[in-house]
Image 1 (cartoon, rainbow, N blue to C red):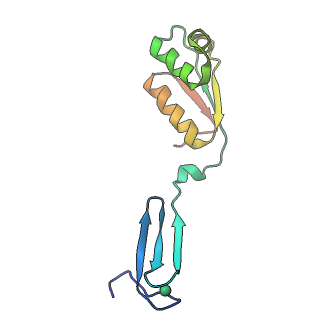
Image 2 (cartoon, rainbow, N blue to C red):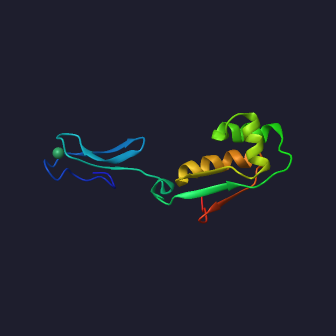
Image 3 (tube, rainbow, N blue to C red):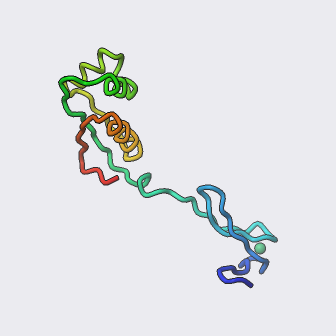
Length: 119
Ligand SMILES: [Zn+2]
């Protein structure tokens, strides 16, 4: 018996590790017994609803306008107006806010997130 292995509590058979993407655990090689757990990253367990506002920018460049436009800010002109007025905000959970945050950072757009965003 190798270190870390143990016998099935049901039939006494050898067990093996399960490692299938986000599912990990142990199962019996002889019967149906198994213990599994699904891996969830901590950010997905953060149930806080965040609110994100971009900061006003007088002369946004094309890339910045396209970024806001692609995030649901409407067409080019609407998105431009939203940036110059600092009038674009998004609400959502950590995972979504993080992905938008990365896009805004890439476009050098400044923003605020409340409550404090630790991701
Ligand atoms: Zn078994």
